[in-house]
Each structure stands twice: as C-alpha cells, then as structure tokens.
Image (cartoon, rainbow, N blue to C red; front, side):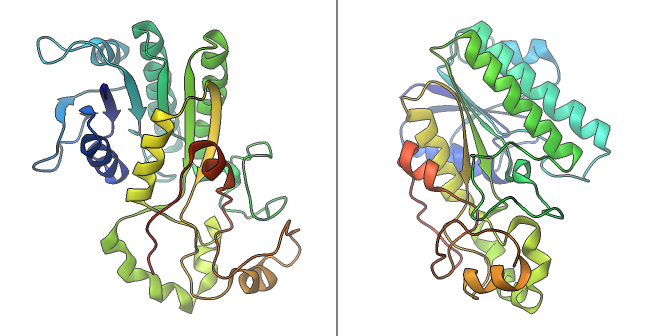
Length: 282
C-alpha cells in the first residue's frame, strides 16, 4: 500500500491514524517530537517540523531506515488556541505546514492530507454562522490566531495544488477529537448546553477521523479540497432542532433537522470520500 509519513503520529488523532493505516497495509513512519505510545505499529523518528532541512530529509528518507515516501499525513501542530502565545502558535503551525508542503513537492509526493480545523467555520461562533448546518460553501471566518493559521494553510494548499495540477492537497476540518474514555464526561454537558455551543455541540471520534484520513489518501481527487469531519450526532441528548430554536433562533436553517444530528455538515465528505462515521458516544 505504500509508505506514509504521519506527522504528529504520537498525538490523540495521530495515534488512531497510525493504527488505521497500519491495519490496512501501509508502511507508516511517525514523525513527531513526542515519543510514540508503546507498541505503536510504525517506525518513529524525532523531527522538528519548523526546520526545513529535517522535513526534507524525512520526506525523502532517513539514512538506512527507509528510502522514498508515497504520501504524507500532516497532523502535528499546537492543537488549539491559547495553549501557547498567539505568535508562537502561528509561527509553529504555519511554518511547519509550509515546510511539509514544500518538502513533499520537492520529493515528488503528490498525495498530501493534513489537519485543518473546524475553527475556520467561525468558532467559537460569538458571531453566529450564516446558516445551519455549517459546511464548506462559505468563506472561512477565523476568529483566533490558531484558526487564522489554519486559514493560511488552506490558502497555501490552493497554490501548491495550482502549481502541480496532478497533486492532491486535502484539508480535513476535524471537529473536537474524542477517544472512548472521553465519553464519560458527555452526560454532564446536559446541565449547561451553552458550554458546548462554541462548536455547535460537535465532536469527532478519533477512529472515524482516522477513517476519513485513510479515505482521503485513497481518493482519486486532485487539487485542493476541504472537508468538515465530525461525528453524525451532537454531544447532547436533546434534539438538535430544539437546541437551535433556543440558542440560535435567528440563524437560518437550510433543511429540517432530524433527531440529534450534527450541525457540522458532513455531506461533502460522505459524497466525495465515501466516508461514513462508525462510532458515536451513545
């Protein structure tokens, strides 16, 4: 199935992606500053992605460990606003993504999938979205330096794809990534639904995020594409239409909302990637 470098393969989503790819026959290299979990089915190399030379070597081959790379999944980043000062977050994330895109181009790698973010949709929605469910059709609306960096990365991807029309750059706008053990906290959200309005009560199971990543790698798309990747339901038991009526009454709703369905529109990923999430907190 080919060799795939996964940056950030030691992180929450990265661990699931490495497992998903290895289980489907890929030769996986985890490129990260953080050490991998014990027994991870991937080679590990410690890489500082802000150093272009290290990234170029990682995507060509390192010494006698491996030679040649077929695809890259770029997940490594400061993963959320506020974890580091804004300038440090922007410098780390945007520079790292530029280096991955450039090194992939220099190495002749035309299959690039990377983690964009739901935040480009306008999170935390202090300014309400233009309509519901939100999707990929409206112009990105970053509201933090972290999100601004993701918007810049998507714009970079458009131009890298323009420079090589046979290449593929897919940005996956992942929702809040959850593992199974995180679901124990979900029932408590009911006490204050407004505490999760910042991302429209959305989330993504790490395993389904990993599935979307593999399908993006395997798709025959070319050029730049962005996809919202979220679980099919919300974090609450209350019907979604009821939540919208109470908390977002002035936002246009484009179609009837059924049950607990997500407000982070995933129809494009279903249609173009053939992705269907398999896991929910319920």
